[in-house]
Image 1 (tube, rainbow, N blue to C red):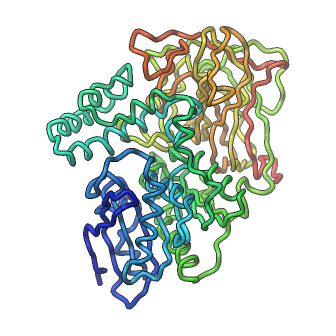
Image 2 (cartoon, rainbow, N blue to C red; image 1 turned 180 degrees about the vertical axis):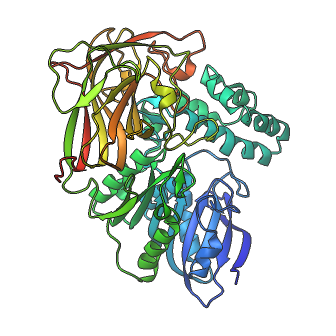
Image 3 (cartoon, helix red, strand yellow; image 1 turned 60 degrees about the vertical axis):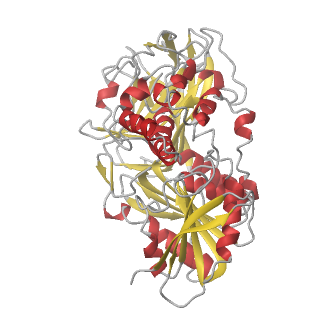
Amino acid sequence: MLPLLERDIEFGMRDGTVLRADIYRPDTQGPHPVLLQRTPYDKTSAQQVVYQHPSWYARHGYMVVVQDTRGRYRSDGIFEPYRHEASDTADTVEWTATLPGSNGHVGMYGFSYAGAVQLLGAANRPANLTCIAPAFTSGDFYENWTYTGGALNHAFVLSWVVQMLVVPDLAKAGELDEAGRLLAAQARLPELLRYRPANRLPALVESGAAPYLAEWLAHDSRDEYWQALGMHLDRITVPCLLVGGWYDTFLEGLLDSFAAITQSGKETRLVIGPWAHTPWSRRVGNVDFGDAAGGVVDIEQLAWFDHWLKGDGPAPRPVRIFVMGANHWREESSWPLPGTSTQEWYLHSRRGAQSVSGDGRLDLTPPAEESPDVYVAIPSRPVPSAGGTASSDPAVVPMGPASQAPVEVRNDVLVFTTAPFPEELEVVGTVWLVLYAATDGADCDWNCKLIDVAPDGSTQNLCDGVVRSRFRKSRAKPELLEPNAVHRYDIRVGSTAVTFAAGHRIRLHISSSDFPQYDVNPNTGAVAAAAGPFDLRLATQTVFHDSARPSCLRIPVTRSAGGGG
């Protein structure tokens, strides 16, 4: 039977702003625990793009409340991303606990922005909040959300604002002409992403919509603006289930959040599958990860809520991860995994590592005297994104695993590859690149990518990272470079879990752009979002790998190709 449904139930926040929610009630005798989702993406959909419909949870004995966040769809007020969510969430939790049929125990779920509102609200410690389940989200709105390594998460941020936020807001305000123009502009998303300067994007400037985007672009360092939006994860006291994907935009932020909450001694569980931001199915990009990869999250959530809200079932183990390649799940006691060792794979080349046609290689032997690799970064001709973690329109920015063949033929991409592994190698954890490099300008980007190479030569990206040179020491205090000075960069390539079968190889790409996943550095030291099409500078890039400057890839290994571990 279908649950009882009540639409547009009103509740006033502490400042009097009225928000509206839909309530799904079980058809069985209560009282029942409550599951609350607060979303900016229309409560009617209830994020069913990834979750089971609320009626499914109601059939399992939960009252489900789905609320439009402030200023969105049926709720009153003005939408200002992040600013009111902590107090609004706390107020809504306490309200749902008093609803007729509620037993006073409230859990929360939701992904992306709807995951972040849980972390913000939980830090306010509402008395009736019992547990949360934030998915595909982060505890930091600056690093690994708006920016990564100082570079703008370009495709995600611009497409999110244009597609998900601005058009509904304009339509709600009755500005249908402007909404229509912006809706038409969505069909030209590649053109929008290439527009310079990004902070003068006509589609938004002409409508006067989304003033917060201009603020995000202007504040490209972690300054007081971002500090005021801090989540205070150390204040979270309720059990927390964190769910993510190896190809998700927010993976590194999710892992950092798990570490921070766990360090505070809270009950936590981490579940990571082989997924991109959406959908969470067995097939991601051009790879089918098998039956085990699909239909997981709702089952995990139900077990979590049953344990904490109903007292049913044992407490789950802290970590469950999907190992790609082997395509199976592992239950673990912690993250990083116990017993993990780090292998250092050094960069080498003789003739040069430019493109897949070069002779760049990775091995375990530190370099002696070798000549550096040199290439020219051309901002007007950036290296195109091929797969990755950009949460955007997949027709514009393919997400997840993808062939790297179109990228690695370029001479502005350095390619370093291991020999084929004689036995399987299991890599689980966060990969880092220690890079000794120089540029002839005041600023540049260093992009890197970890790749699996199959025996037939086909390639699949696993994770990627970037650092904008002026943010190499601090995200809060950028520091321009002295031209041609050599610096050491410690770049977070990203986290993964993969088994390299015998005969497979690991490959590393180094370049100075990955567009449109990240914005393109003008190489002048100026804020990238303010750079026009004629404000770009070519940069000569030098990557060192010698005894004094031994660039290397640091790989977390849980089972080595020699059979150890």
